[in-house]
Image 1 (cartoon, rainbow, N blue to C red):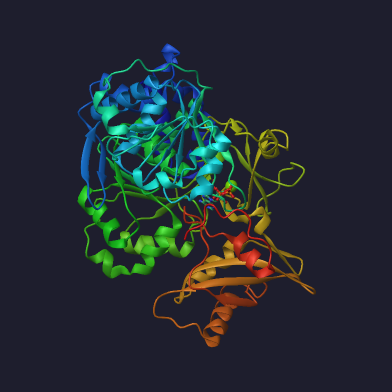
Image 2: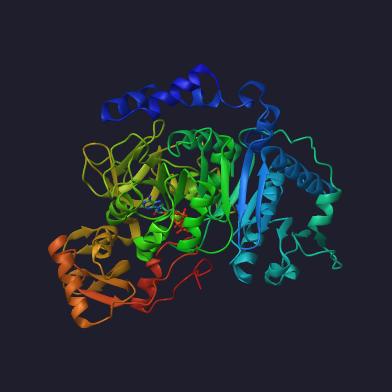
Length: 574
Ligand code: ATP
Ligand code: MG
């Protein structure tokens, strides 16, 4: 690593107060980060080369890259293994005529083969499209059709959900673990892999060539096909260093599925660009199994989501006591606002401050974060990284002073910014409607120290008796109540107040849904937060509607409440 690069990292990693932070910001430039990559000198770009092959060429091929486990498999792969397996799949794709720029989708549960496939797709310069295994027929069809995918990697169990007759572009389907395929168009993945050569001439690209298409989570409406390019690796690598704080001997675990952007940017690229051992766990969420995964692999850096932390909190500290979690050094969260209560619990339960990070599918990588060395204010998503300028702006693009709620916006561009919304240029333009800014669609405010505080999605902000109330604040107060496991808050139209606050609440085990409890919860928010933010209506629900990536779908709560159509439900949990 170059000296300039080391210096860049030191200025960022060791900052521990606002003064140093400002200095790190003023000294920072992306060009210094770019010097890390082989393409800085050669001009030849390929993500799979930088993340995998490069480690082999530089003598680190024997290091463990992937520690995979699920109920039936437990396997370890070195960087050299991943290099060979992905070369094999790249060769297989080329044999079937798949080439640079083609979209190749992956629709299967997590397994080592998923990762071999994704890297193989990248090696030949094709664009990867990972789909979450739980999608049903229509969700799969919509995404394959929209992206014009020419090939798909899947498993025998999921084949039934692929409407081949309605997908004329889809020429080849590779079936993993299904044995010889007799059906035309179906190809035996395993046999092809065994027969393919394990080295490959990587497709050399430019920084503007395609990398991935990710469909968004669908929290606010129909999922968008977000197209990312190779240039994103600059920010994946950099944030892996300064936000994930990855070091040579770390064992890192990101719990997200590659069907969501966190599962690729931080489940594949950031750890492997940094040459770190990456844990992948298949199967479903279970507190026991998750803690065992940390204990058995000695996970040191852990990246998960508020919904998981809330469930772990609900599982009780007895479960934690049964496991040795002392290997943990750094814990992070993304995907939804992280309730202050959860941060406080994490500190008590794990001896770890859970670091909140804010970013979106469209942003490709982290932008506003809490990172090591920085004082954490529970409930704040942190500060913009060096190299990133964030602001709160009004609807005309004017910057607002501290503590004003408004549009959270980022000065465009940054390295991992999306390059387009697939098939929807008008949607893309909307994000950039205010000159110079990317408008996130989230509502937030900034405090006088430059910390950002998430309030809700712009459309979810509630207007009650002339006050603007972010649902997050109310939800966070609600989950502080011992009976409340999860809460979703919406504005309900009201003739006198404009809107009133309505809360949907899922109770923790052992609590009964009684009118007295409703009253008690109402008073708890009224006294702990404010009268105008207390939910005048509370409805108990067994479960809240969530996306498969674990986000509460407030638009569904609102549709229920107002008897409106629920819209696109392709990403909702069962
Ligand atoms: P869709 O765009 O389809 O409605 P989505 O916005 O949930 O779905 P993602 O790109 O997966 O899809 O999620 C990004 C959003 O998640 C952000 O805009 C923000 O609302 C929320 N989010 C992510 N991280 C945080 C965080 N740390 N704090 C608060 N909100 C967060
Ligand atoms: Mg979104």
